[in-house]
Length: 301
Image (cartoon, rainbow, N blue to C red; front, side, top):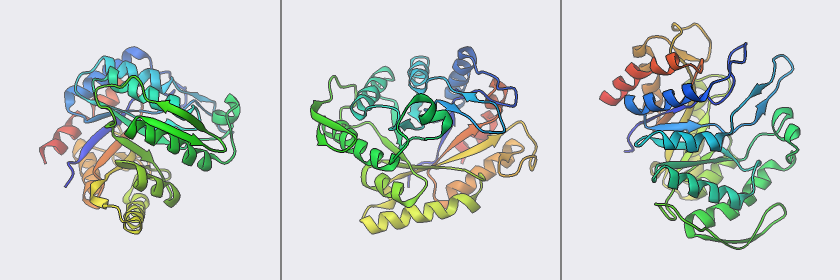
C-alpha cells in the first residue's frame, strides 16, 4: 500500500478580493516552512491569467521560474509542477525543462502535466491555440513520453513533431522522473493510466468525497479496462483548505480546527487516494503555517 502523502500548492497567484500579490520573500518562507513541517511535496501551478465577468483579473507568477526557485531554497521536499500546460509550450522543450528542474532539485522533481486551459485569460489573451486542446495533448505525449522514458523521440503529427530529437543533457534520474497526469474525465484518465505514475484530479464545485469519490471509482474502472494495476498508481486529490476559518464557514471548502482538517483529509485516504494536494487560502504565510499541526497529526498515523 502506498504511503499517504501531503502536498501544498505554493501561492503563486494573486488572491482575495483585493488581488494581493504574493511576493517571493513570502513564497520562499512558505516553501522552507513546508519542508520543515514535513510536507511531502510543493506543488507549483502553471497558469497565466484568470479573468471572469464578475471579478478583476487574477495574475500568476511564472510556474517554471517559481519551481526552480523553490528547488534552490530547499533540500529534501519534492518539487512538483501542478500541472505544466501542454498548451503553452513545445513538447520537446517541456521535456528539456523538466530535466533541467530535476537537475536543479537534485532528483526531487515530480513532473505534473496536463492539457492546459483555454479561455479569455489563458489561451486567447496570449495568442495560444484554443481548438482541439485534447488532441494537441495526446500528440504532445507522443513526444514527451519517449523523451522522458527513452531519451529520444521521432514523431510527426498534426500539431507537434520531433525529428530524431534526443534528451540531452540529462539530470540525476535519466528516464526516471515521476510523471503525474492531471485528468478530470475518463478520456484524460485513460492517458494517465497508459502513461503516468500518478493520476491527479482536483475539486471543482466542492472539496468533498461526494464530488471526488466517483472519480476515483472511474479511474479504477479505466485501469481495469486497460489491464493496468490500479494499486500501482499514485492517486492525488487537489483540495481547497482554509485553515484559519472555523468549520462550516464556507461550503465546499475544508476548514476548522487542525483535528477537523486532519479528519477530513483522512477520509480521502480511506477512500483510496494516496495523496492530497492542498490549495490553501488565503495565500499567506500564516495560513500555511496553520497547517503544521495537521501535517503532524497525519504523519503520526
